[in-house]
Length: 166
Image (cartoon, rainbow, N blue to C red; front, top):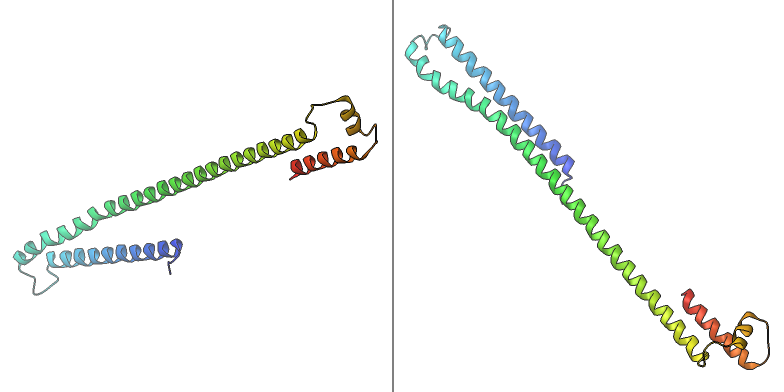
């Protein structure tokens, strides 16, 4: 089970903060020990040659610490930018997929509408094979109600309207 990114981020931040404080404490301890040794506070280190041998080591530790801080901050900034860019890329990919899907839906709807119109044309063409006539127009408008053939034509028109309504 994956831990939420916020929980990981808080845990990582806490870990980094502990590391930073430990380095600060170690630096202060080494600098303090060096200062005490330099002023002769330690009895065993009264010999200045031992202090001069420890001096480069202490400076390397301090230099490493202060040299490492900017690189850690730079790493964090670059990782944050990478995360932001990948998030933007994912958002763009999702928008593109949604647009492609919407375009496909519009195409399917257009094809379905074309098919409905074709079905209506076919249905009406079988009923009015001779083409439109004044009697047919009058009958469809309800001006004449004569015989059973009118009922057949009306039924055909109802079927065509049902095709259009689906």
